[in-house]
Image (cartoon, rainbow, N blue to C red):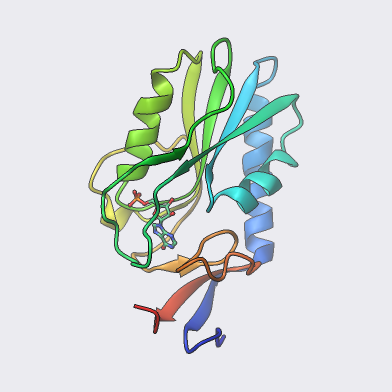
Length: 181
Ligand code: IMP
């Protein structure tokens, strides 16, 4: 697949594969959180599409909230610098929390978020990520629900971007050549 502006893309996970897996994850979460007050926290911006699809597969009365953190900026390499741009709107007390992330790469971002959210008085905090790139992990983070393990390659689409582009692709694609670097 040829992307715009010279970036070459190849489909890694098709929209159909993703939908199938998200359906399974939603069913699992529905079973695990029955009769438990559940808040899903989407980490912006990358998780917005995954969260939107996932919550429609969860057959429970849930709430959602969002956090936004500093991103990679214009680079495809992690800086390790994490800064909260938008914090939670609601108290987590008396609720079980599921943090919804698009991808875990070095683990630095989730490690920070996990600590931050665990200090907010939730009944439990678990992590759900669509993608896992274990080859680049620097900090161990517990991944309670995982969609797909992928190789150490930069991917875009289904909410994930490079320089804010390609979030609207329905598939997850590998970025074969990035001319924006
Ligand atoms: P970590 O802190 O290195 O685990 O990076 C996590 C964040 O980096 C994710 O939430 C994404 O925003 C971004 N990221 C890591 N790998 C990729 C990728 O392959 N494509 C797009 N964004 C990525």
